[in-house]
Image 1 (spheres, rainbow, N blue to C red):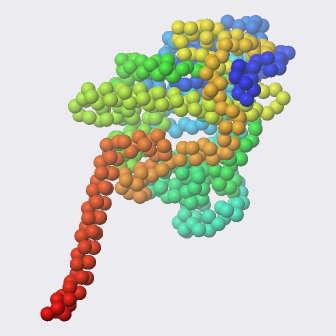
Image 2: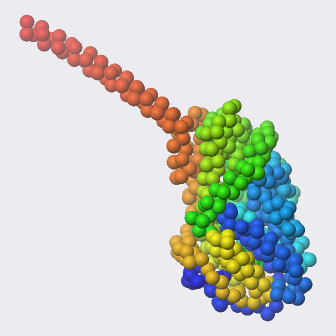
Length: 531
């Protein structure tokens, strides 16, 4: 690992032990926020390896392919919205696990990890170097570091058609919780939907809410983490309870305390760009997408609503009730943002301009979340590797100034790649000065699995919820505050205040009338006494 920022962050290259021969079973990963040039660097590294004869600066390795690690680019179509590299931009470099799923398919991290491992093994057998590139950092992390994805092996074995997992004895706490369930809830726990046959994807809303309520009673922390419509994650959490005999949140907590080593010897390139330079670049990319035909592309894909799960009868913020923007490829930035414009009959320019600005904002927020994941999730795992030799090494490169791409990114990356593959210590590289501020100290990172679960807890908006079994639910914090600022929420809150005020006034008048009636006989008796 490389850095100039101290021992608690990324170590200097001089501390890395040299190897006597070419590294075996290597993997290269290119990560970073959207818009930093991950695909470009991956292609440039692959082209450099394509020139290798097997006995040059890259050791015995020759040739490379890029493995896509973008969850939206897995799906066919939407080339503009998902910002896929064009055939011309690929420059002949083969890209794997791209355009492999139908838009209606449900493809999750465990699917990708298993498929990526198969592609990596095939490349290694041909002395080719796998280059994993993409912005779905959750996927990359669980490929590089095994045993960090909760019950991945169990999940894969079920998908392969093996026998059902064993059911572990329940902890005393869970036994008490189960004993308090109704007969219907106990029956539901004993007969969970079968994820291997995609049953959770086709549940009724009543059934989905029942599963969420069941999980919340058995494991409140995990129940608060998942949206009630996210049935696959809810069912998986309940399966973990049955398989381990413990709450899923406790299993998460223990898993995060376990140190681990990298699955492969890996060199990770982190492309970082300063926000002041990245944000204008992201805005310009959105505008270019619109020029290339983004609207027509999204319009043609809106027909997918007929094949995907529906939203509740009360969609948030006036969105199309027939489109679930939390499912598969429809999570792509742009779909949700252009919904109002494409749903309107007159296609007002104001709605179009608002949609473009919302897409720019969503893209910038996505980049911010990616940086947060690297800081809070990936870096601590790299720091806490076990074993005498740290098998994963991180090189941070400054991708802020595209005019200095070759000097700041391409050339130092190729040098580091050659050092890594030939078994030499990595040479020093000019690092980003601000990197020290971005890397958390070891003791500042939560060791609890509940860090992630509680950090993004879902809460219910009681004002906008019409049906208690179909609540309007979102993440607390920024997402909830954004929801509170919507016209729909403000109108309903204003209506509720008016109703509450009217009820209060009515109760006050009833109280006054009651007091007057109570005083009337006394006043009458006083008058008779005076006479």
